[in-house]
Length: 273
Length: 343
Image (cartoon, rainbow over all chains, first blue to last red; front, side):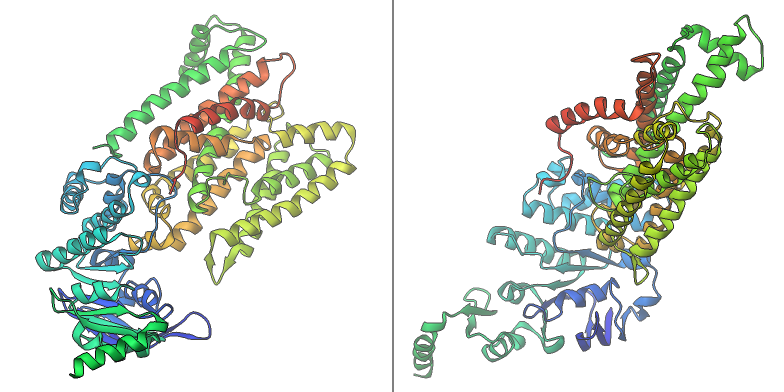
């Protein structure tokens, strides 16, 4: 569905992304992980042509992204970016209806059908009961769902998420990603999520892309990417990787510096026994 | 569910147009010569239908050549300043923005002052023309400096506007310091914003700018909603952001230039009318722009009517009234409702 073909990108002199290639199939749930400044957000921005790479190209269903019009892109790819809110307090329903913009062209007002689509999107994200509240009166978790509803109202095939779980507590993190997963599994939406939370990425994503200094360091299933060796090389800190006892997916534990040697040695001894 | 529909916009616009009509009617009946409202209506109707009634020539002249053009002029300026204020607030994503923030007003002032110093009477069409040229040149300069790599960044534009504005202010000070006493009075009143000097025929001059400017801005009302969430967010929704910004900045600046050129720097209208309307009707530009235009027109006509009758026969500059009445009302709204997001 999305074919990223050896792209390189730089703002000024230094390359932010270098020779990135990968493919995303329809209905996949992809996680983009990597340290701060590794190019995660830049990569997402290239995927919806907020930025254009200097080298290489991105194909969307075999069509180069740069040949598609803005509205065409908006109809295919929706984005839930890091916190952006209107300067003045719009109501929830008004924000969700904005998702219909790519379909309205020069029409001034939404039709009954647009309203139906917005209502369905709010039903799915369970925000219908506060559809009239101003956006700034909502909690962080509720606001995230409003923007997911807006993305759903956009009726796109792909949703790009940039750090969606930052600033959410664990309850809302899980609730939010369960919602995303249901959209992925039940509605066949393709999801690309940039995140710092590798444990959540490991639980939810089909495939992970691990970036390091603007290049793909490793790509594959969570089991392939999240290994003690890989994570320690890329992040430069010591970690312990085992399995989540319930899901059997890789799980990262962080280690304190002064104690980790004894601990790891201890663990190694246990495991080698 | 409450959101903006075509029906809602039409109904509110009609109601506000009726309000505007009443304000105009009130404005043309009061003054040093009292003409009853019924009488005024008959005079208006007669002139529209081309009939001649029993009313005296003096009354006809007062209504048709003095008060009505002045009310229409105040209405156009009020609408223009309110709409361009709303646009600047949205584009610069700054609730403190007003139509003068990019220095258009200072350019207009320099143009007007040069015209006064050259001996042009304030009643001639030369003064508004000079002022409009001053404003237009300022727009070109500010936009030229405010662009980086072909893109207009709000803060760069804001800085360019403020800096060029303060340079022009220095010019204004200089001109004031070398001006004669009679000129000084005209200049000071112009700077305070005043309709008593304005040529009623200026209505025809500024109408096309303000009317067409409004129409073209209104066509982009929905896109302006999207840009309130930021340019990236608007782009994600398929908006050609750079084009939207260029067109909107240019139209809003032209509207401001046209408004300012006929009556000087009337403060406050362009700042508080958009905010007040947002507090009452919400931030959606599809409703905000027409209601701001109509309410701004009514507000400025009412203010001008007070300005010329309060201490009659002395006329106050209308800017004094807009600030004196608008300020407290805005504080009241501010205390009772929320203006901007409180995230």
